[in-house]
Amino acid sequence: EVTAGELKSRGYYQGSNVSYNLKKLVEMGYMHHQRCEIDRRSVRVRLTEKGRYIRDVVAELFSRHADGMEHKGVLGDAGIEDITRSLKR
Image 1 (spheres, rainbow, N blue to C red):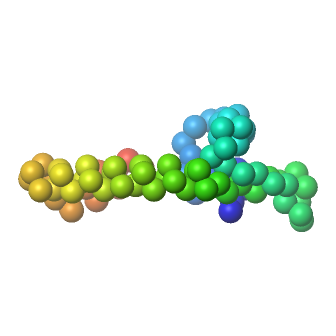
Image 2: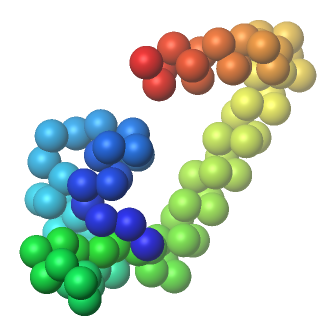
């Protein structure tokens, strides 16, 4: 459970309009949002069961893709780490 601002500051969200996209994810049932008890201006968000399912599906697809690239000799662990580091920058 995090705030919308934390999503952006931690690098989980790269877009400019976090609130709009979170609203859409809530409407579609992937995220749950709730006003923070301490700071009523802040909204805390978390994945719903439906959202966790999609997260797991995407993680599995990514893992299979990475394994396939490694087994075919396209990229090894070091190459994937280099690409990940570059993309984070």
